[in-house]
Image (cartoon, rainbow, N blue to C red; front, side, top):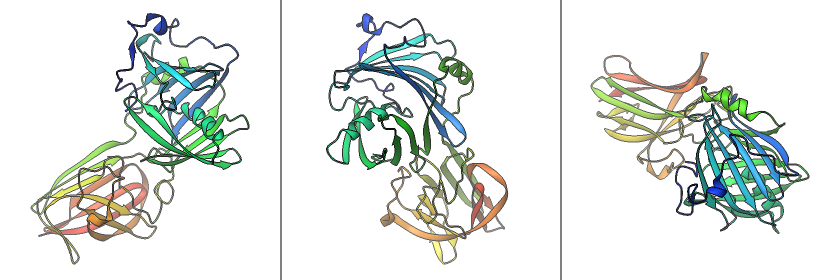
Length: 368
């Protein structure tokens, strides 16, 4: 959820602050005096997810952001800075990506706390975080970012040589690279749940990009898949997240070997059965469970867990019902979306299949 989705009471309506909210003649803001311009390009695999055109001067940061997920949006963020370059307020203009006309304007007071905004899928504020971390007396500092009515703590660590890490409280740790002037050069979140990479690029025409992307949104980064099947008298259902390959190396890379994987994306994969299922000497009673896996090159482990209604990061081994071995085989063709299949196999049982990229892990079961 972006900070635009839940506007706190501190926001000022444009109608009440007409001077502060007056649009500057369309989509692209005027050039600040003695400013620097650059572009941040965000990719998920081989898909461009966002383009941010940033202009920074002594007293402001102006960022024009085209975001393609789930729908294409165009926003202009105007951050006011005090004499110490600490944010004091931010005006946000939502524009029509096809025409550049202003649709909505809001202003937020950022004078409390660090003042640095946290905006989903947007990365220009990380340069402000780098500056704060570089100026800290210790190599490790926690920065509290403003995200609408809530805050998000980031643990920043200075590694030396222009390298830093930033750890989100639930999504994991990303690495950042800065030049000698403290400018953000690259951000690698490929080991987090977002799995994004960000690079600094030369300036470009973001208005044309917005028009180009207006009719080509990427949709949800990871949608939901559903299975509902009748197997040998049992009604079996699966609800799971569907990440896409997007040109990335998957197993042993995006999904590491020998570590618990949520087996999908976002909300945990939920599995339900109306009849008991037997796998070897193990029995899964009727009910609803969550599924996790531990992928390995030659075999996988399927974990059936009793906890339900949880995010895929909330795995608790204390709630495990059973661990089961899955066979693994290579596939002849690439499977772009992660896919779960449950299908009948003979008169009294079925097969559970997990497919992604060029790998299938599978498990036979019997219905009791």
